[in-house]
Figure 1 (cartoon, rainbow, N blue to C red):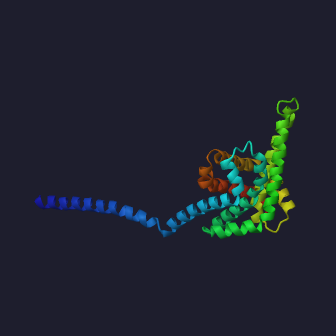
Figure 2 (cartoon, rainbow, N blue to C red):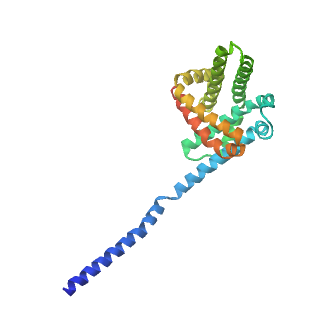
Figure 3 (cartoon, rainbow, N blue to C red):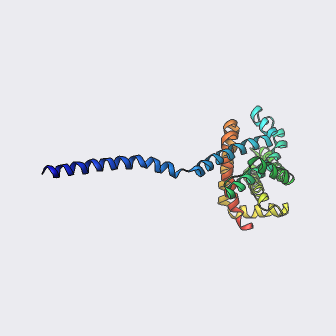
Length: 246
């Protein structure tokens, strides 16, 4: 009987020891699963986002200065003059997103600068067209506000302004994807596909509106942290909208 009890005690001690060894090895296994590649991906993603935010702010510095330092409601003509700078800056940011998504890493500054320089003319043209359409629609809305004809004219003008912004964002997404296409064809494809897949276009505009609202109320947070993640979501939705054009 004594020997049986001894065997039982040894068995229980062995079970406890094995349990402790298993508990101790679990964190080691978890640490083993998080390898250097995971850390590299995480830090690379964070770096890409923060650097893209900085480059966007630098590329649109006159507009950023107006938003941060002045009352845009009073200085909107100057804001309208500098708003086309958003065109090449967004093209460059979208090029960074595309390169990072394809390779898992990218030389952010070089990719951004190369795309900005290569597509500067197209980006400014698209930005100017969208800005002009929005300014004209806004002035007309102010004119018709409170008038009888405004009940018909204002919804049409708002729709036109939203359509111009949506077409511009889709075109800016398409420029790095289709660098050899003519600007007229890019704009036409953006207009048609944006209307065809309106639900995705609407989602992209909601995210873009959230970013604009955040930058207007908290410029440091919007430009420093939120711009790249939100623009990445906009880019992903617009890229899916344009997929059938390629």
